Image (cartoon, rainbow, N blue to C red; front, side, top):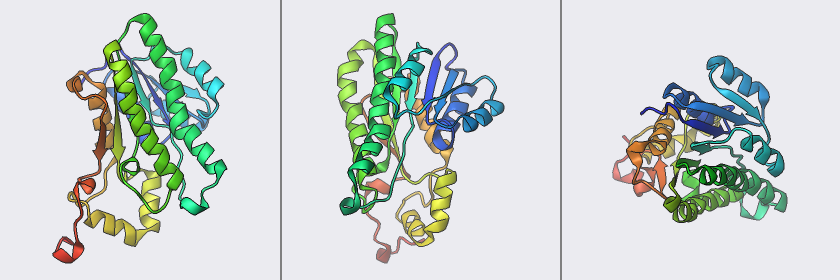
Length: 253
């Protein structure tokens, strides 16, 4: 894959999947803009790859985000990765939690996509968008109620946007990772050893995703190698969603 001559914007690029996506797209030739709330994290990213340009803005601030993105257009490759999460169950979920979760996980992606898409249409340029969602948008979980709802909403954004934008030359998909071994993912595994082991045993691949497993799929979806992949929510979870392995039936190895 070669993204030379194309401009890419990656949100939530200070750490984890977003950070590695920015580095990966830069290595593939794209002119990369990395956006995150925390400037210090962006500065270490720029030290790692000086070609990457950084933008420090809180995506929950609608107006400030629109202004920042408009200043770097055109953007042909957009990765909406910025997100927040929580572990509140349904009865414990507050209005504040719901508002914050949807502002960051859904509204910010819609806001940024609007700016990018409107500019592309004016310039009569084609583009590709990837939303970084989660397997939590595809199935039910017993915690993270607001987070799960926000990712389900993001998944439907993909389908609705694809119907509207594809005739204009703009393609959109999502990746829906399971547990990924980012820094925060590793901490979760350490703190929830028993549950993590059960997840691994119920995953046909018998392992968790590395960050590169996700970034490689993002690059594929952004590339011309996937021109007929459109409007899809693509799980990246080693087959965990395929069905249920009953450990009593000998799937523990």
